[in-house]
Picture 1 (cartoon, rainbow, N blue to C red):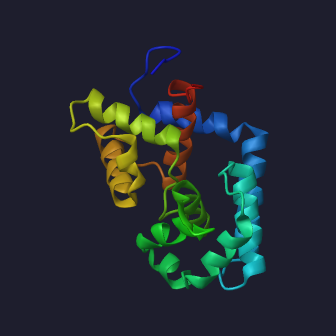
Picture 2 (picture 1 turned 180 degrees about the vertical axis):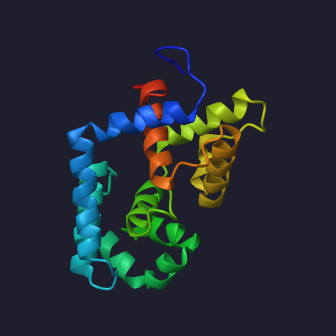
Length: 196
């Protein structure tokens, strides 16, 4: 991995500086408010049109690469997930993520975490490849059992690793959303995607 400068140790102050940078970015804030408004307007998941609005907005503003949003919305409607989301059930992520399209099962894992997050932001952290690379790096840097990015595509492992990270670097006072923002901004800076 190529890094633009030495990678600093995460601290609460560093986290707050990245969160402040995110808050100062009008594009990030506007996109987030737009998504929140759509999810607040359509809180249930029983009407395909309402679910489609949420799928399209998330897909467009987060670039989640869902090229056929209508079947994804119909899939979500069939799942009967409203109570599971209220209960904070973790299996709802995989339920949403695994979609049959044209006879093939697609795994829209990152999208599913975002969909759950906007229904229950204090319960469901967002999976993102930038965040995953940060977590993998710091697990190794402190001598913990190494993880592969692919292992974090299991939601329970992802949550356990986020919890470990928060404890290891004394960031437990951050909300789920603040941790999401910090790790995404930090990962975007220090662990950019490689154009191979």
